[in-house]
Image (cartoon, rainbow, N blue to C red; front, side, top):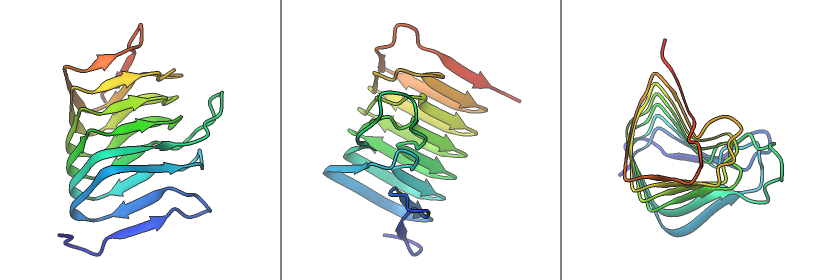
Length: 171
């Protein structure tokens, strides 16, 4: 049930990620892999979507370099609400596993976020919960969790980092 025309397009400028704009009640699920080799592209970008569900997916960047040069997030949520991410694996040098901007009602359960080189998650003006999620091999150049004017709740999550770094800003 999509209330407006759904747009799934390859990003411009020869990038290979996907952008989904202004959809309602969209579910992407199954034992599927969504991977790209363009390290500067976001793999899955959702703009102004509501009642979105991702379940059972493996999403990430392939062929990552040995050093920091990846600029694209794995999942980017901009202006979204009521988003569920369950049983997913988000990986592969993506600068950020989940990047949420002005997003509310994000619920992430039983999901692995790993091999991201900037931050496991980054929230700006957003609200979300993480339940039974695993964060590992983040080799973070910045922080494991980055937050600006946001609320993030963790329940039964595991972090393999010796020192979990949280950066939070409030104006």
